[in-house]
Image (cartoon, rainbow, N blue to C red; front, side, top):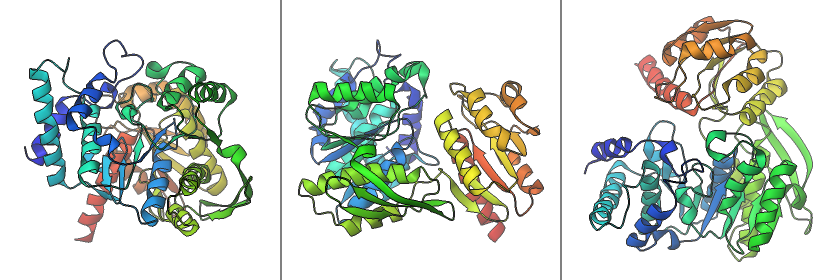
Length: 447
């Protein structure tokens, strides 16, 4: 099977929300991925790993930790989701996306085993899109003999296909409301799903949490005998400042006095907290005997890249991409505006999915915007632009309704003054679509 055929087949299986979730527990569990991994010879056990769950910040934390390990000289694997432009983004070796040929070869091998197991009656149903891609990551990293792999949970944790891992360290980033229809309608319920990644005696790095979430996760950790490293109590931020929209911090480990200066290139004050999750994991690995220098930690944080999250595309006017697809992420984006763009006119190109808390997100973001341009990402999960405007336009001082995202962005670019700032927000699908468009737009302009 060639690359295009492999991608078409995967897409025919459905997308992210076909992954196992609480709401689908009667149909989905970890049985399929476990059977497939067993048939592959348990490639997920061929290398040490870190497993990361949370509502926001898990992708950035994964990028930080992988960057630290690669800077330390390890051959790394990184499995994340969703992708922005191309499915290959989900599987990275030493920071590079899996090639089209390797992707096709790996999927062809996985699909042959799927058919074998289905014919033998060992699988009740064909593995989902997400299960197949997860199995591909497990297998590819094993065949490429990585020294360490970092896995980001797709959705939830407890029933996520990545959760057959027994990692060396688990990380749970900030837990907040998102995917309530799948994970639960209280912080305690959502935290229980995220805490489902904990394994007996495996240490967990735990970001600062609201009390309801902290109580649930700590109780689960106590039950399983997991040592807990709470970043908010294990480390002290001695000094914190901003440089060109990026946060800088001098951090001290309370028990040892060890200190480090964190200087992520990723914009936003919250990135120091995400970086601290990775630092805590790296410090644990150091103590386990992994050869990770302090310089590798500092440089790994400084060099990490995570597209589509406060990603700046140009200046005059500034153009940023930021998913801001749930209320917690929207609050972080609003804080970035207040801290860095208080005197600037802000334009928001906004599209969202039907299962998101769009009115709450709009209520956080739109009061800061001079104008909102409603649009509709190209996915069957998108809320129609007309319905989106009907639900949320009351939060906006001025707005326009333009169905095609590319046209919506050009509308804002045509009207924005050089000192203004334009933000694409509300959906990672929208961000990926316009990120791809921007690359092609720049190439056309350069001809």
